[in-house]
Image 1 (cartoon, rainbow, N blue to C red):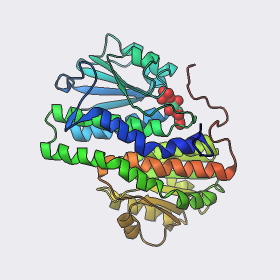
Image 2: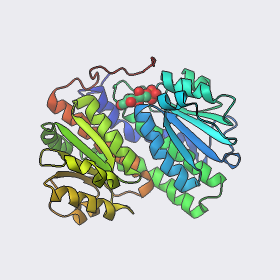
Image 3: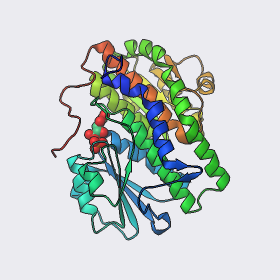
Image 4: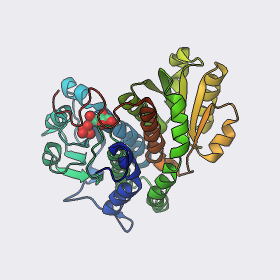
Length: 362
Ligand code: F6R
């Protein structure tokens, strides 16, 4: 049932304020983050290894910033199909964490089995709680996204991020890496997030107009720095999956190390840049693009859009939000942009060619 939407993808994008709120409510009891079963003792963990595929891998890349910055735990992130065949050493006091919407992705499951008897703790973040990955973990953290029908993952991604941020805050508290006041600030940022996602959804009409122009492009670049880098990767994946436009993402700082050679008036450059601590750096990358006649589509908040000046090609305005929740918030315009571009091109949004919802073969 598409609940009045033209596609499941659009319905699932619209559900995000509610499902993210549900995930937060489930884990947050007062100011305590409560995990199922015996939970996880983060004072006994010295490093994390995060493993997943596709969109879930980008959720892990985002989580690396959170675990390292908030909880000061070193994190490695790997694509499951690389991890399992490389057979990496797993030092003592390692927690291995697997993220999977379906819980049945063959490579992720094989990576989990490789870690058995090697890692101190096997944790999974899943949507389908009856899945193989959930069953074979020591601790399973459900994301409460509800059934996701669209092949391109949307609400599962934002719910994965929400649960991973909660887990990073849990680790930060256990390790004394954040003061009580800092933790309270982060928790209130999370509690305000569903409302902010709702406001972000309001940009839909303006994104639809921008998407019509974007649908004429053959190649698109996404740029982001810090927490926005994994989001740029996810934005590019969403766009290529459903609109079949060639899209690539780079960390903004990598622009001048190669990809800047691609810039001309035919390649739109989508810059994801809230007015955060790294904004000025990203603006200077943007100016390098514009100086080469590149068309910049800037996603930022009103302050960021104002500071970026009048030379940007298209703007998408997001509500201002605390830096740590911006990846969850900026997932929304990235999804809407891919969605409306695909609709403008007339592709099969919910069933893109060559793709399966659950990849149970290697
Ligand atoms: C992209 C997408 C895929 C999945 C990937 C992992 O929109 O949906 O990249 O994220 O196949 O699937 P799960 O999370 O089920 O392990």
